[in-house]
Image (tube, rainbow, N blue to C red):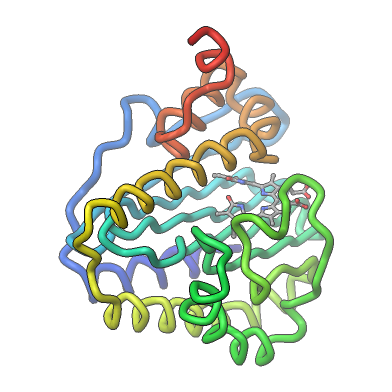
Length: 243
Ligand code: BLA
């Protein structure tokens, strides 16, 4: 269901950047579950280039029961740009949840004006994908923008509207990256390193997918996947407690 989106992202990335593979820890790049009635496969890809230090995307294919495309793009630490976040999910073809955002690292007004206001017109262009839903797992005011696309929708809308929206958001993101001036002050860079790390910690702790990973692939694999790949700069809670 979301495979055309993966293809689109890949084409964009390979056409625009000089990508290098970025290692995925052994055993995490591909896993097949034989647990449920429907076999589930989870596969991930990870790259880096001069402007982007981590580009990861993951596809879960559990046939009709689940199709999920998830991605985060982390700019190089010289850029304070938001992260590009993608989470497109379908369960049983009926429950479709799509989230697409420029995930802000900071919440001050200057940052909002610079990186979030430019999203306003795109957000307005896709009212069927911008439903102002309430968040249950995450705090909407922390690493989300007010112009995120967030919708519970039908397969028809996914098939006909989402690719255009995805393309528009991606293009704006590439444009911002192009125009961004790399920061040089070590203090600025340290602030970005910390903000990206905090994002990983927050996301690993809240991720509503952890139960889903456990149910398909087992708890141990799920924890490794979360802390060893998806949000590798996060520290598992148990480990912080021991310090
Ligand atoms: C919700 N994301 C979800 C849910 C799941 C995932 C299972 C809950 C769906 C439900 O309501 O039943 C799935 N999350 C994943 C998967 C991965 C993951 C498969 O990290 C990793 C492979 N989530 C993101 C990113 C964004 C994001 C990058 O990982 C940003 C665009 C958003 N996901 C997001 C939001 C919700 C969600 C906003 C709704 C959660 C809420 O209501 O608080």
